[in-house]
Amino acid sequence: MTDCDICKILENKQAFRLVHEDDKCFAILHESPAVPGHTLLIPKNHSPIFEEIPDDIISHLSEISNSISVKLFETLNAQGTNIIINNGIDAGQEMPHFLINIIPRKEGDGLNLQWEPKSVGQEELEKSLSMLKIFENIFSGEEYKRVTIKEEEPEETEEEEDYTVKQLHRIP
Image 1 (spheres, one colour):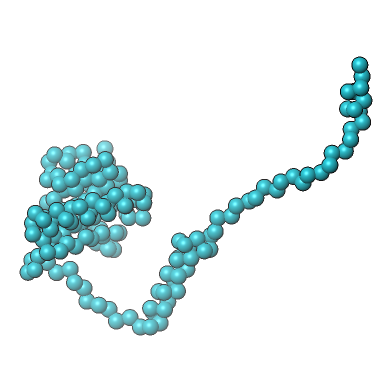
Image 2: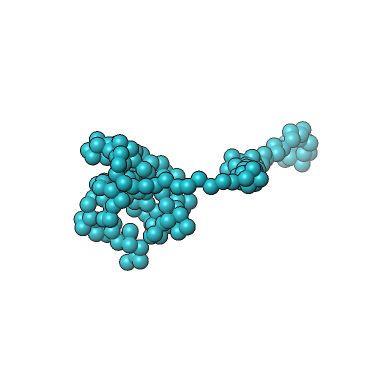
């Protein structure tokens, strides 16, 4: 038994309002939604944060997020959706299990997700850019190119005659 509340939901899905399920993920309506239709898309394998999820699962979650978003547009007459990932405690993640919030939006729904832009100086922007470029080189493979070791092929040399072998072939 796990201590993760999200994993416990997976063990008792029928008690929740299941919107989608496949072998990799499931989606339920949020029990305390920001607005009606607020959906949680959750991978079945426990991973606390985005960086720990395999690429194929992230790709699948993206496809399912899109599908759920389309359903929210069509069934609830949403005029937009916010697809939100709170990745880490400082980003507002409340439970140690990665999930995606899909929130249908309508004009005048009263939900305010706007933030006040910060004034950042040129020096801070340049510092951030240089730090990101260091990582870009790592991710693009510039800094850590795969090295292949080419095995040396033996040089072709003329075989010296082995007189002992020749003599053995002559023996009747």
